[in-house]
Image (cartoon, rainbow, N blue to C red; front, top):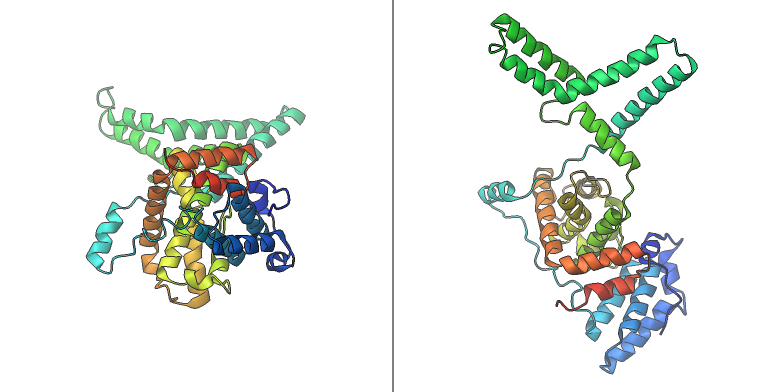
Length: 374
């Protein structure tokens, strides 16, 4: 009944075997032997132990086969050792049919976190190129005025971008300082023009230095704890919704592949099935946006990409997936992901710690989620 020594959960779920289905179906395999053994135990109404359960799930996870994973999970649930798998699959709310109710729901749902990763990265790279290039130019040609000019421009831009609002305030208060009429208005207009030139964006958008700072943070930040929190969220939501794919960093391509799977795909070709996939794709976004101001690990674009891929592959598909409903569906999925994760804070924290330790397998990660609530 024991499988080969399992790899860590993070390594296992990121492995890409050449032919996953062939690996699982090859006889005899640990997964097949485990499945046959558990099926026999179910017939005899004999409950499996935690080690047997872990062995069964680890073997299925190594196959990278959704149908094999689902079969193993169903066997374990039938045996009575999985109480939380798919426990939340029926709690997802569908979109209301009435237009007024939809509008009211949209106003009550959380907004999707903004994501400017391309602009942030481009701003950071440009900033580094100017600064490093100027310093190298000064190093090899101290008399060259271009280097000093570039550094001065960067410094001036930073000052105007971050302290321009003070200049505007001074312009507004110019009358008190003896500036009257046209002089005060000119000072205010000059400051506003300088700020707009440096920002290069609308007032509602991030400033140039905010983009640079966010880009530098994105380029140089590596937070394993943060990564594992996002991965634990994705794992937890997949398990609770009964999605038999425990990818730690799910994306739109994995989701669309699941909808086309010959054995389990039909489940995800309905409105409810697509909703499950959206909640799964936004689980990491939900936890990262709750803990951090900037999204670095998670990617909110994956969920919207799934809807677009479904429409591209099937037109106005059978799931009722229309472009007009995208924002509402995405925001509803984000809200539902937040609600699910808030129901299991202790398990989520323990799962994140286990993943961070590098000692977690699919089997013992499931064991954490199955622990009774104290």
